[in-house]
Length: 189
Image 1 (cartoon, rainbow, N blue to C red):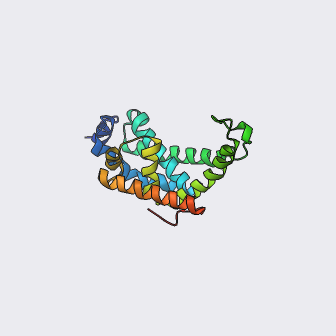
Image 2: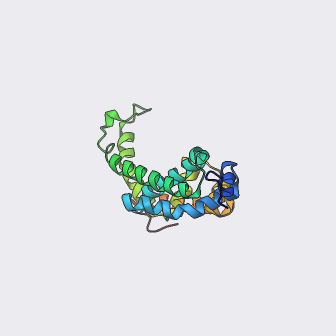
Image 3: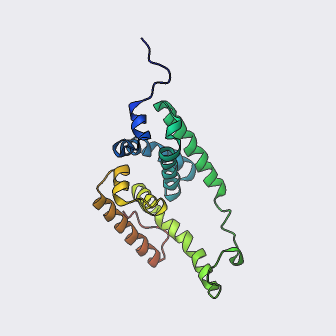
C-alpha cells in the first residue's frame, strides 16, 4: 500500500498553521545548512547570516503554503539561499561609490553627517562580522524584522531573557568596536 503522492506532512501543516514550536524546530533544522550555503558564496559573517535569515523568514511567511513535501523544503531553501547570496555578492559595491550629493539627507545644513555615515557603515559591517552567527541572526530578527525577544527565542531557541541579554551584549560590543575605531568586534557575543 503506497501513500498518496500529495499527502501533506504533519510538520508542514503545523508550519502553515503558524505553530511556534514547529517554527522553532524549522529554524533549528535548517539554519546551519542555509547559513553554510550563504557563507560559501559570501564568506562567513554578517552578510551570510543576513541572507540566511531572510531566506528562512520568507519561506515561513510567504512560501510554506506552496510546499507539500519536506524534500521540496530543502530544495527551495538551497536554491533560494544560493540565488540570494549570489545576488548579494553581485550587488556588493554598487552603492559604495555614491557621491555625497546623491545620498538622501534630511538635514541639508549638515553635509558632514553624510560623510560620517559613509565612514561608519563599513566599520559597522566589520564589527558585525566579529559577532557570532547566532548574535547576527538575533540582531537581524530584532531590528530588521522587528520581532519581539519572545518570538525570536521561539525561532532560534532560548528564553526571551536570554535573547534580551544577547541583544544587549551584542549592542555593547558593537558600540565598543565602533568607538575604538576597529573593524571587528573581536569575536564578541
